[in-house]
Length: 207
Ligand SMILES: NC(=O)c1ccc[n+]([C@@H]2O[C@H](COP(=O)([O-])OP(=O)(O)OC[C@H]3O[C@@H](n4cnc5c(N)ncnc54)[C@H](OP(=O)(O)O)[C@@H]3O)[C@@H](O)[C@H]2O)c1
Image (cartoon, rainbow, N blue to C red; front, side, top):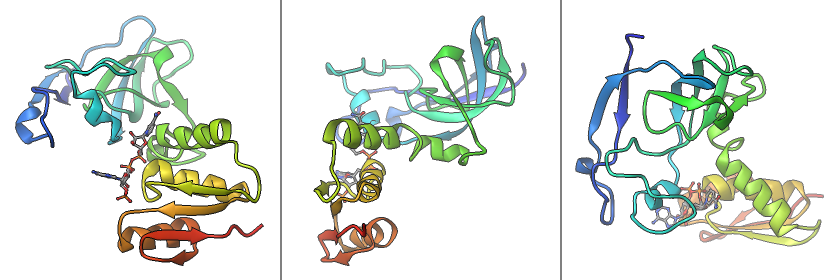
């Protein structure tokens, strides 16, 4: 294949905020998928707070990104070649495909997506890792009961926004906390439609 893969690699472990020199921009030929692998043309890349932690050389739930490696990241795209029995060219998938334009990945390591159900980019948000975190964190761990109050920090964020909406659907009173009046207005209008106190967004669920 003649296509060129554009990639963002980690050149140095950032101290504080990452800076442009931490990220060399590299190009290499796109490679063919091996046995059981798929070649994905990436259309969307997620930007997660977790990515900052993955840049650090510290013990965590996942090893740090190594210096020189393509930056780890969730991405969604279209399969353009497949050697996996359950995935065909034209299918849409997501997974930890990295901050790059093309990815060769194990077919068993990506999720096949139904873009008839929701647009591809939604599978990096509400139907992706942030939405799964919100759903399982609230439902399986938090176990909210109807009528209970759920307090959501970071309520304007990807996870918090979904938590607030799920809690509301479950018949809970939702208190969202967001930084500043602009964010509170956003949370109020789009997520909770309640009284805006400037720092707290309050909503009593309509059951
Ligand atoms: N364990 C897991 O599997 C898992 C999965 C997904 C996410 N997470 C964690 O859940 C948290 C929320 O993730 P998210 O995807 O919802 O993130 P997000 O969309 O970026 O939202 C994060 C929120 O944190 C607040 N914040 C506080 N200090 C900040 C700072 N210095 N810079 C930027 N934002 C800051 C901001 O809200 P305010 O300004 O309103 O405070 C922001 O809206 C993160 O800590 C993330 O690592 C964990």
